[in-house]
Image: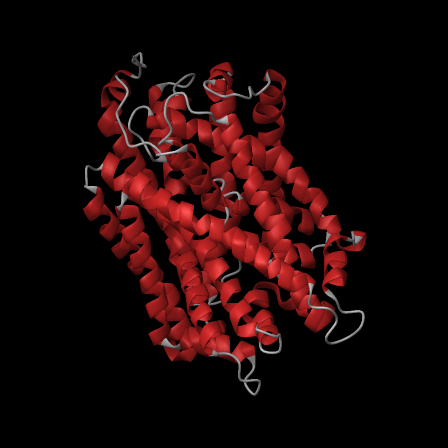
Length: 518
C-alpha cells in the first residue's frame, strides 16, 4: 500500500497558529479563570502543572504522531490512525476493534462538544454586539436576567446559525485557503485583544474599595490556599489540561495528518503547548479574575461559569469605556472559540471526504446540517417556555459525559496504542524529521508508564467521586435524553469507524495478517 497524496499546510507559521488555535479556545479564557479561582488559586496550579507534564505534553506528542502516521495513507480521522498503529503488535481484527472504539469516541466528542460549544460561541458573538450597542448597560436590569432572557429568545439563535455558517465557509476553503487563513487572522487578534485588556485591567486602580485592586486579584489567584486543595480540585486541574489542550478529541491528530513526511513533531507539539499555556495562564488568568475582584471582591469570583456572561457585563456597565472593552472581551472569546470549533468541524468533514468519498464542498454543508440537528435540543431546552438559564439539563448531561469521561478514555486508548503497541517504533516515528529528539528515557518513563497510569488514576478517581456525589443523577427527561444521546453517538461512531477500516483494510481483516506497508 503506497502513501496517499493529501493537502498540506502552506507554511510552518500557518501550521503552528492553526494548531495553537485548535488548542486555544473558550476553555482558556472562560473555563480556566473560574476553575483556578474556585479550586485553591495558587494551590490549584500544583496539580495543574503536574497534569500538564505527566499527561498533557506526552499525549500531545502521541496525537501528533498518530496524525502524521495516518496522514501518510490518506486518513484524517482517528479510527484508521489507531488501527494502523495498533496492528504493529495486535492482530488486525483486534486492532480494528481498538480503532473502532477510538473512532467512536472521537466521533462522539466532535459531534457532541460542538452541539453546545457552537451555541456558546454564538452567545459570545451576540454579547459582543450587545457590548458595542449598549444592550446590557441598563443598571435597572440584573445581568443574570439579561442572560436568561437572551437564551430564551429564539431570535438570538441567529448568532448560533451565523457561527455555523462561518465555520462551514472556512472549512470549505480547505487547509491552506480556509483554516490556515482564519488562524493567521484570528490568532494574532486574540493576543492583541488580550494584551489590550490586560493593560486596561492592571490600570483600573481601586474604584470600589481600597483593598479591591487588580494586583489583589492576581494575588488571590497565585497565593496558594492549601485548605482548598483536595482530590476534587486535583481532578478539576487534570480535566482542565485535557480540555484546554484539546486532547482526547481526535482534532490534534486530524490537523497533524496534513503534515509533510519530514515535518517536525517534537518542536511543533511543544510550541503548541507553550502558546496555549501563555494564552491560558498569562492572558486568561490576568483578565477576568482581576477585573471581577476589583469591582466585586471575592464574591465576584464565585460566579463560576457565569463569570463571563453575568459578573463581567455587570462590571463593564460601570467601567470607563466598558462598552468598548466588553466588546473586545467577547470578540476575544468568539475568536478563541471559533479557532477550536473549526478543528472539530474539519474532523467530521475529513471523515466524509476521505472515508466516504463526499467532496469537501458538499461535506461542509452536510456537517453544517448535522450541527444544526444535534444543536437543536440545546436550543429547544433553553427556549421552550422561556426557561433560559433554568433549562440546560440536557447541556449539562452531555457536557459531563463528553468533557469528563469520553476525552479521558480516548486519551488512554491513544497513549496505550502508541506507547505499547507501536513500542520503540513509536519513538522513531515521533523523532523522524524533528530538530529536537525525544529522549528514549522520556518515551519509556512517560508515554509508556507514567502517562497511562496518571490518566487511568484520574479516570477512576473522577468516576468514583462523581458517581458517589450524585453528579450524574438523572434530574429530568432532558438530562436522561442527554445521557442516552451521548452513548448512542459513540455507538454510531464506532460502527462507522469499523466500516471504514474494513472498507480499506478488508483483506487484512479477512486473513488477520498484516500486509507490509511500502
